[in-house]
Every structure is written in structure tokens, then in C-alpha cells.
Image 1 (cartoon, helix red, strand yellow):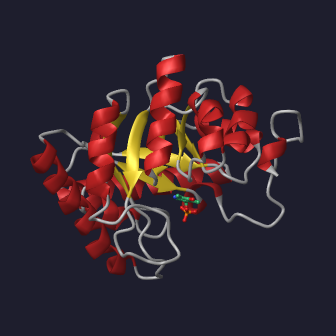
Image 2 (cartoon, protein in one colour):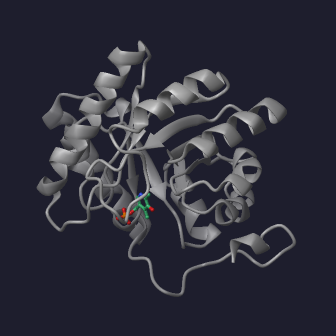
Length: 242
Ligand SMILES: *Cc1c(COP(=O)(O)O)cnc(C)c1O
């Protein structure tokens, strides 16, 4: 087995074990392979090896890789700037990290024009770290209300990135807080928010135990990202990337 296949098999085994511990069905957890900074050929290898969904945090980087991975489903896991919404909606079937009301408005506007209907998740800064994006547990209520008022926006859940820690157990309270927040929003607004995007290479098993439906795994699948990251060629419509 080559490197990718063996890392993928190891990640799959860990996902299956976490699902078994939590009494969850493996089919309820989607592995989002985070291919950011890796070249399109590596992303294509992941798809050939059975990864179905690729996550990128930059719109232009994903658009540049997409032609080489025709069967991939793409998720935007990084922040979405208002001026990138149109490009983003031409590719991504899910937007994990909406963190501002004006982004919701821009999404609704472009969706009305183009008919695109991506799944949308709101990013919540559960630990209320000053350095992080996202709504607070309090302000996310206003965002849910705004999304419902826009009508167009298909809100499916919440996403979080807990504070960095080498100890996966330290992430557990944050994942649990996101799940409880989701439960209370479902009750308050009488809506279903089935998706919880939480867990990365260091803590995806704990996230699955706490209810994650999307785990965003980069390093454990693709290896370490390095400074010589792959970047799309500069072109007329990618110059805003640089
Ligand atoms: C890069 C990134 C990941 C993947 O992180 P790893 O620790 O390499 O698995 C997950 N989520 C987001 C939002 C990211 O930007």
C-alpha cells in the first residue's frame, strides 16, 4: 500500500472504532479530507482511494484543483468572504464556516440569482477565543433567525474549531457544548440542524463520540503541510487569491 492508502486505512479504522464506542452508525459520519496546500494530483489520489468529500479553506485553491478531481464533492471549511460568494457557489456543496450576518445575506442574494443551494453551517466560537472567527453561543441565535428569514439559505448545522491543544480530551467539553447548543437551537426554532462539523486530525475520535457528523481531517490523511505549499497559477480570476 502506498502512503496515502495506508494513512487513509488507519483513519478509517479510527473512525470506525470511535463510532463503535459511541454506538453510532459509521454511515452517519462523513470524512472530509482536507486537501489544502496539497497539489491536485494528491487530491485526485485521495478520491481514487475512496475519499468522497474534499475540504479546502480557500475558494480559488479549490477551483483550481477541481478539474483534476471530477467526481469529488467539495466543502468550503475556511472563512467565506463576501466577494468570493459567487465563485464559492460555483463549486462547493457545503459551506462549513459562515461567521457573519452579511455573509448570510450575500449567500441568499447569489443563491436567488444562480439557483445554487449549498448546505450551510454556522461557525461558533464555543470557547469565545478573541483570535477566532465565529458567532458566540449568544449571537448565533440572531444568525439562525436571519438565515430563516432569508428563506433561501439551507441551514443544516454548526461548526467549531476548539482551542488548540495536544490533548484530545481537552476538546471534549467544546464539542459537547456545540452539540448542546445545536439541541437548544433546534428546540427554540423548531428546526432540524442535523450536521455538526467538528474534529480534526488530533481530536476527531472525541468529536465523533460527542456527535460529529463531519470530521475535517488533513494531516492524518495527507501528511504534514509544509511551507512549500501548492498554489494555483496566477490567472485573471485567481489574482484575488494572492
Ligand atoms: C486545516 C484545517 C483542518 C485540518 O486540520 P488537520 O489538523 O490537519 O487535520 C480542519 N479544519 C479546518 C477549518 C482547517 O482549516
